[in-house]
Image (cartoon, rainbow, N blue to C red; front, side, top):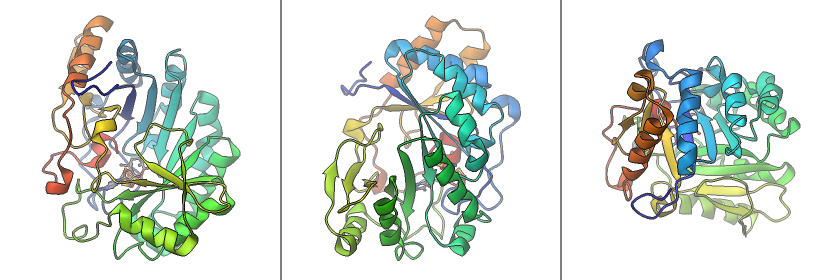
Length: 326
Ligand code: SAM
Ligand code: SF4
């Protein structure tokens, strides 16, 4: 269906857990977030019910995220449930890649079509630092397993961070030349990170793009990379993969936004940056029928704001990215 601003909403991003096996500096506090109790989190069956309720309204694509979706028990069962909904034609997953090497084959068999892997640096010590303990080798094994299992297109999400990886952005873009990897540069967003570390580290997309084209040559615009995201993609000369830019802050793409989010605790959230959540868990647990759930889903779509004003202020929100589903 269309929302109040004539945008067609067909994509649901699902946070399957607020937990994570890493503690990225820009995403989580060092001690992790205080996890909500297990029974606050939607069960696999409840998540499936919410997706089913969205189908009559036009939901066709889902992305599983978190927290770290691969630490969620029952994740493969959820993927199988979603694959069995005939109208759902695309199941994607965003992961830090740590557990991907051993799970890629099962994810593919269960029905995942494609994977995004987050990677902000090519240097093991920096990776360990930014993730507060992560092992870069494991991520590379995961990326290779995604390629080997044809979970394509394999996209790499890189947050551009001044004073941390600005000297590596060209090398990260270079990854697309020899392998069919799609590296997307994401602007550091003022959410969950309004602390001393993040201040002044934001790099606008235009600057990243100039750095890359200056070093590696012009980009030829590409429109054909499968996905729902509001990204600009270009191909470096002779490259197998593409380079993408997601400028959520400097040039927001709200007018083309086709998504709704489901938080791990069962709130439908119309925008990453909006607190206007609609509770669907309560109805689920009160035994609401499918029609009633669809009605609540519709309400959430109609609640979608025109646009966010991220550039204007740091987000004052009681949720952080891993809870909403980044
Ligand atoms: N754990 C999975 C992962 O890291 O891919 C999925 C969840 S994570 C919240 C999803 C994405 O959000 C990651 O690519 C991460 O880099 C990004 N992210 C988290 N906090 C961010 C911030 N403050 N600004 C920009 N991107 C952020
Ligand atoms: Fe975990 Fe992903 Fe957040 Fe890093 S970005 S702490 S991997 S949820």
